[in-house]
Length: 281
Image 1 (cartoon, one colour):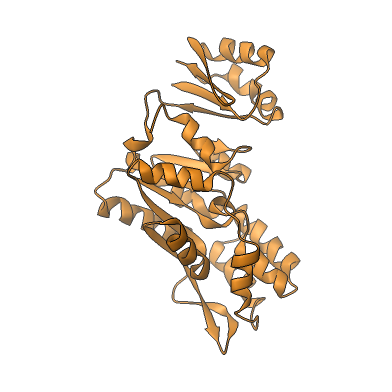
Image 2: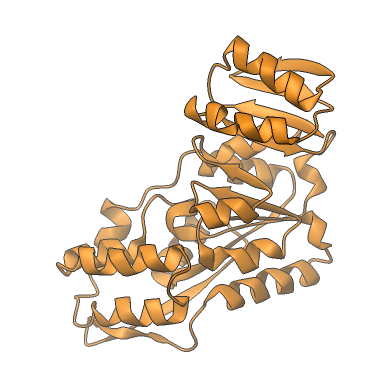
């Protein structure tokens, strides 16, 4: 395995301690601000250094040597707070004057403290009666791609991977992103609208953690891929089942429980930090 540390200057004293802790055979600086330690082993001594590494706002990952992005065939993204910087439902609630109430439930759901279906029902009920034209305002005025999202997506597409958005969010946003960014597939919840206003419900069944996992498995099978050829990126408890179906799971600026179960955690860099783990495309 290689250990990749990235995101800033790695202090010499800390690099020396990491080399000693991992038994790395060589240190390879890679511009910009990436260090690859070859033939490194994760040990208890290394784990003791993690607080020091993260205090420098550096991301790190143990990753197989000679792995290429093109070894994969599918990359799937959660949308809210992963592919994009916002939680769309929280921004809709802001227009309804109920952002605090909705955000509190959102955070609890992301930590896994509330069942996602129940949390979505509670939050949507608070939006009943909101003018549907607010959807366009959220998309146009507040929705931003996460740092590095476009770069990672373009690299994946150029390497031949198929791409998907698997979201517990809303089709109004996922479909626009699918078209704008050239995703191959997207699934999410469809908001029910009546008389130009949100009803506080969704159309059909709710896309929850289990549904996201089912979709990633279906796509894997339809594309003739193995689990090891799939990458899944997410940030919350609702993504864990999906991430468990991927050969490479990526926690992006995620809650602690999600980071703990992911193969790779990006805490400080953009989504394109994932690209630095591969030897080449």
